[in-house]
Length: 222
Image 1 (cartoon, rainbow, N blue to C red):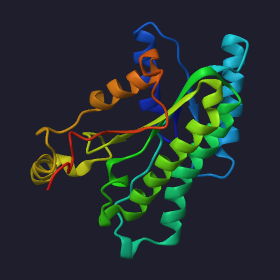
Image 2 (image 1 turned 180 degrees about the vertical axis):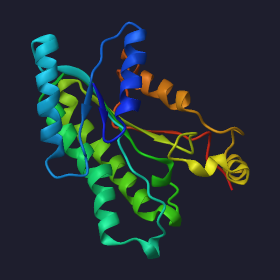
Image 3 (image 1 turned 120 degrees about the vertical axis):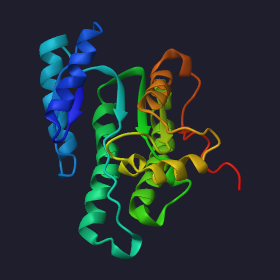
Image 4 (image 1 turned 90 degrees about the vertical axis):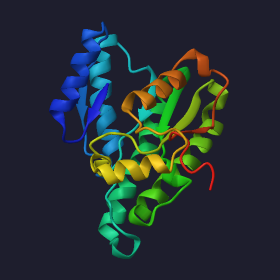
């Protein structure tokens, strides 16, 4: 199940990659900033799953939707704050609530935090706070769902070469980022995908309630 907000073409590309590798997939659209988005999204998911599998059960939920507006603390307004928390905190909370009634026992929830929950940045203060909420949510869900054997963990990426991290396209921004890390290169999406693969696999069966940072060792020393 590949969710998208507005990037339908990108979602279809992901589905094509999955199918080319021998899997089956479908897209589902939903604006996670809107109230009731989780219930609306799962109504669409249920219909697709019933048509394809005869039921609504599944094994893994990855909460990786998020927005990260670069707005300084002093310039953040309430509308920006509310939208950011709607997408980054409210959506994963209620998507997990909906998923919990459908997840098979011994399933997985993988949340996406950020290194800025540990190293908050004034330029994205509200975003940093929202990711702190994901860390707490991860531990709360691990406690809530552990009796069913469901593992809940979070990945906290550092600076990763994506559309969201435009500052890495600036040579000065890239060099500054590398200067803060013990591993002197820019993180790539595969660095995060491999960790997600581990958390989704049986190899992580004894790992739950953890926030695992994947930042190349950002600011591990003075």
